Length: 471
Image: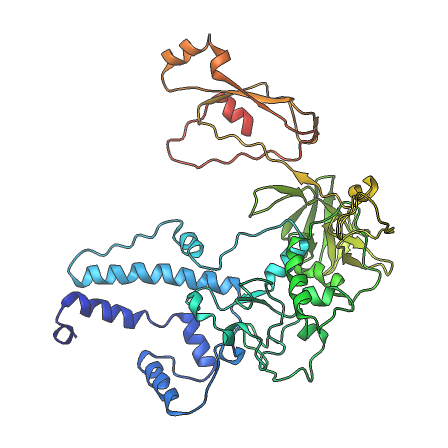
């Protein structure tokens, strides 16, 4: 190899490339499809494909399989480890000592470099369902060049019934990100699809995206409105006085099993051990203990604001209650409502009487709402007041606790940044008007959470007031 390449380094890296070319997941998939899973056999098989006149479009789902987020993480783990082992093998072949050094956050850094990575957004159960059903050809070793997304890739292919829907963005990104049906025709954990060239033999759950299935009597012959509908589902926020669906396709009831940030479903048989206003303590039959937090705050990853996502126990849940696997134990009180049939359904908004009339307050298709309508459609927004402090900061006058009400301009706490020099600290002790800073509330409301984040280090030293604050 060295004589052929003319360079020892080139020979080393080619050998490492061959050794690490096939990862365990790719090997398993090749064996599943009964095609060669070794380096030479793969290339011979790839070349043999050129001997036929069969044409396959990139958008034909029969050429792909569904890759889940957990598999992408495993692929990134293999990517990080294989690269370091390749570098180590090259060092050893050059005569150096073996050394493997992988950073603690190497996998996270690799994940964040992917073109389709999104921070989890828990503001809305609707958005959680839609984000969980997104599919794209982007991702780990996917089609990441914008010029690759031709019309054939973006369009719905006639062979993709049961594996993707027409729901997509109503913008220039149409067709790049699509959505799975509510019940896609995935046949196994490897992500293989059951292929259909038409809708025959499939039901509505196999053909409709959640945005289509949730809304009864959706018009399938109006393409623009269907696209707008799928996009608007990402903007729905929970309302404090929303109402359940009166007429539904039961997609609203199925949603609770698809939104783990907004519900808690029993993972096995067990019983309720303890309950209070903040938590439900449960014990499974295998002696595993878990806790359901009833007081929750979710963050909008895009805009940096927060909403309340408090849970309520299901009506039958009480201390000593024995539950079954798959049973709903608690759910978000603003996102879900109990229907007249006794089931729990995802609620999109409030049912109100609307009186239309012409007047000064009317402009095109909008008007001023009454106060009671505004209150019904309100969302419990949480405002964050954050401060970055040094480790030896002195915190004073912290009086408020979670659950207390505050008014605008109320002083939440005071703090003073100290230095490592005691002489300078003593000098500024008599000038607190310059060194002491106040943190005030800007709105009337209730303190719902207090969070402290810090990065641990071996020689970390905190001031006494900082220790008292977070303990």
